[in-house]
Image 1 (cartoon, rainbow, N blue to C red):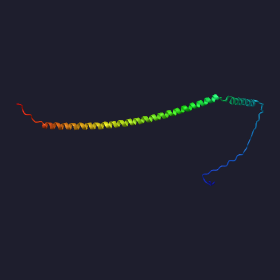
Image 2 (cartoon, rainbow, N blue to C red):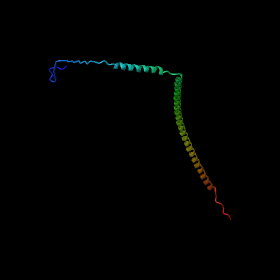
Image 3 (cartoon, one colour):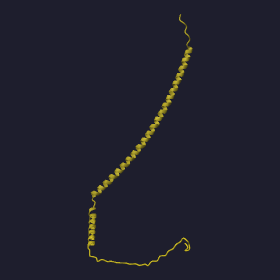
Image 4 (cartoon, helix red, strand yellow):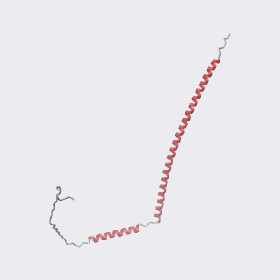
Length: 149
């Protein structure tokens, strides 16, 4: 708490006389039946609402059967939609698996074709080498024929 002798603290006490003046004015009231009329109108509306709720809300066996049929149809529709979504997901997975399998098969076929081409090229080189060797041996074996006289 601050001390009253501190230089930056200023205190003022203001005293005023407390005078309370009240004036009450009452006007003479005339008798009115508007409140009773409003209450009667609310009561009539409440009775009409109760009659409507109790008499208009009866359900027949046909209404109950229609509600059951509607519920059954809704369940069947939801089940069919779920089955269709599951089938679509399965088809997507099968399509992806088929595409992957096709890609693997194509790659394997390309690899086999490359191997076969390499073997064919090697066989061709061997055949060419053998033909060249045979031709050179054949030329060595051929002697000059004797002249015809």
